[in-house]
Length: 482
Image (cartoon, helix red, strand yellow):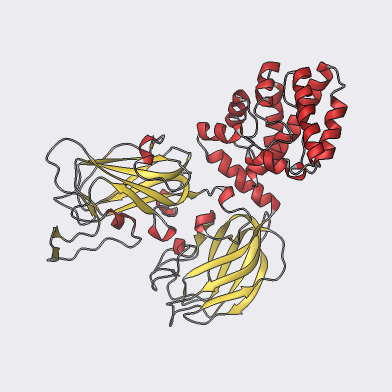
């Protein structure tokens, strides 16, 4: 059964860090208004020096050919499931139609730098009417970092909502203190008992709450029981600190709360029922517990919570799952490029990318081994050429330098012997000396080089291939869990 995409978080919310990076025009009203989380306002009779004050993005009247556009960097990159283009309060000044595109580009590129990005359509062209929310379903399943809204020919749009599932790049969060519930890291409030006054997705926004409206608040409970919200964590992890923020909830904060956790089976207590105070940012140490994938926040009996933060760390399985989800979300071209850094064969990278998704790192490694077996001798030699001679750091990739860290500072005598040995090896076999050198000293590398110089060509080629597979196994793990 399909899911109503409007129940998913808005990746275009300015509270997440979404920002306008370029626009063609904003004469009457700023494009930044598109990203505001609250509904658009209308103030009758309010004008400024440029015309009627409007709560949205409004361009001037176009007197020649062309269209207007706005580029937004999403607050949380992810897979877009649907878009809402809201023309609230724009009646005689809305565009005739619009269309949206998305791309995936690392860093913080300018609008000019994004001009040559690989933009893909997000849904179809949509005819627009005034003062109306237009819902656009998106079936494109790759990870998106930027969206471009194009309106034709000109006019005003009040709000842009880009609903989807956050997919962080594991390299951006690995090793840092992590809010396992945080929306920006992939946490998702998947369900709750009630959200009469405000939405559950406010619970795990990264910003501080701005008002009572910027939180999760239930109606007054008149019978038995209690209210609750369920959070799917960024991935499996262990919680150390629970932060429950009731700021702005002064006469309507819960009296107490508790936390339950779940991995595969039933819910188990993580933090016992604990009293809360109104209008206060609370932090509680969480007793030792096993890894969990979901957490249920129970509030007694009802009320409002502004933010829930669950500080902790991913388990090894959780880190692998997160990395595999990221790899699965990439476009084929981007996935091939990432995998090409693991193995210098274009054919290998393409085949491993085509076999996505992978459930475990072991599955990925098995697919990589099968793809390696499919390569002929010339294709394997292509991968050899992507590796610098051992003992040389010039031109080496970060992974190569990391793998050779233990042998990075040889004595002058050892360095000279390595250089001479590498030359002799190249002359004898026709390719660079390959060795999985992680943890080996320069003298260890030199000893292995000396041993292998005596091999016959067929034996040495088989050994070199086996060493390269060891390197690839290590790099696949680094790609998924940096």
